[in-house]
Length: 92
Image 1 (tube, rainbow, N blue to C red):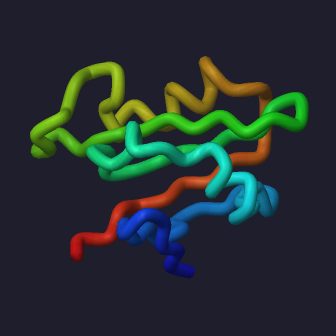
Image 2 (image 1 turned 90 degrees about the vertical axis):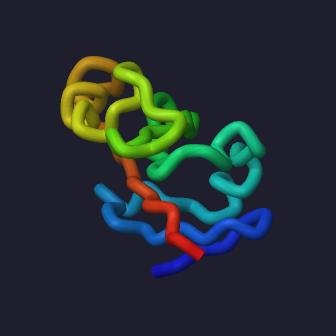
């Protein structure tokens, strides 16, 4: 599924436990996420958190937001077995 927000298109590549809620995502999304290749949303205690990730070739890449470390982020920084989704920015 493709979603569009503020002129950016994203493809939902993972929606673990039906975590993606379009209205809630639109309410949390800001221009801060424009430069990220991926946006991960996790839900803990009924609240959505968003985090951006980049691939190594990206201009805005840094170790903290390395997409290769996504699994580690989910295990160490998110509630155990929480709902989450991954959006991939579509190249337009």
